[in-house]
Amino acid sequence: MAPGGTLSSDRETLKAEFLAAHGLAEARRQPLAGDASTRAYERLHPAAGPSLIFMDQPPSAETSPCTPGMTPAQRQAAGYNALARLAAGRVDAFVTVAAWLKAQGLSAPAIIAQDAANGLAVLEDLGDGLFANLIQDGQDEGPLYDAAIQALVRLHAASPPPVLEHDGLAWPLLDYDAVALKTAGDLLPQWLPKLKPELAFTDEAVARWDAIWAPIIARGAAGASVFCHRDYHAENLIWLPDRAGPARVGLLDFQDAVRAHPAWDMSMLLHDARRDVTPARAATALDRYFALRPDLDRDAFLADYHALGALNISRILGIFARLVFRDGKPRYAAFMPRLWGYLDLCLADPSLVELKAWFDAHVPAASRQ
Image (cartoon, rainbow, N blue to C red; front, side, top):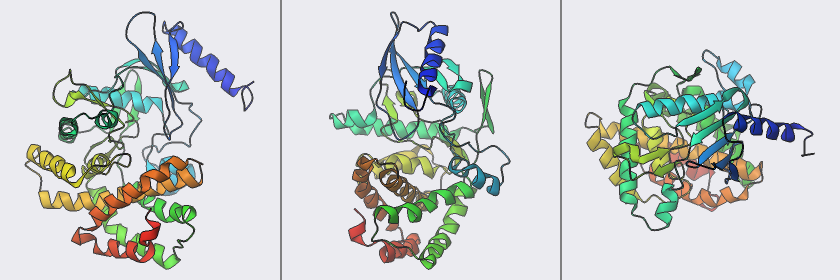
């Protein structure tokens, strides 16, 4: 019997029955490497036809997501997913978001079969051409980042609906609001001192942290106007050179999508925790974005990009500190120096002088490793 009683064996039975119901009982199942989530993926190799991807997200593996109309107090009681407006891995979120993305002419996986109630889905296999892997193997990153910017522009030109619907499922596209943004900002002071005991943030330091972020959070919430993938980086983008324009970018891991400020996904792409994006590459990508969106106020967007980028980077630093300290995943510590470098670039913006002073006072250089 598997650890935890019959649950694991029961789930294996459920998965086998689901595959059999969709003519895939005999498909060879190949486990794929996981990430920091509670999902598991397998590549299916049917006797005939192309390979497929099998998604397994146990519905009870995470705390509940936020529902429309939840008050801040209700979100606090429900847990982190509700506070942060994360989808809790729900398959109905993935299915409905995928369908909407495809309707915009973008390359999300086609949904072959789904049982959202039980957290199972079979997806189109977009292949192994992750941007991160291709670049590491020597492919020119320029066309990849250019296509990624084209895809962002396509997303930012669309008017996202309040509810996404597909195949009898519905999922709300909520705003990345002030509560969710503050939850993001709270992660660094909460978790970084646990990982680095030499840091001790006093109540006064935390109060100052909150006060500095308040106007930035207000700007981020007020600017929540576009579809936001939310995890838009080189390990979630697949190169599909046989397709055209922005459809050359295969999209993965988008189930946590929200309506957010357009600078948020730009930060995810150009402040990539897992690979170096040079200042020159970031500048080229931003220039391309502004060329494709001539209506934008460049200076105002860059100010928001640096401010919300600093918030996003702080959030990821807090998450990685939590993954290392609480979850016993030390490999995430190796990404943190890169994030500190990105943060320094954002903090060079003169409008963030108070935030820079806070970090200089409370997180010395020796702790930014």
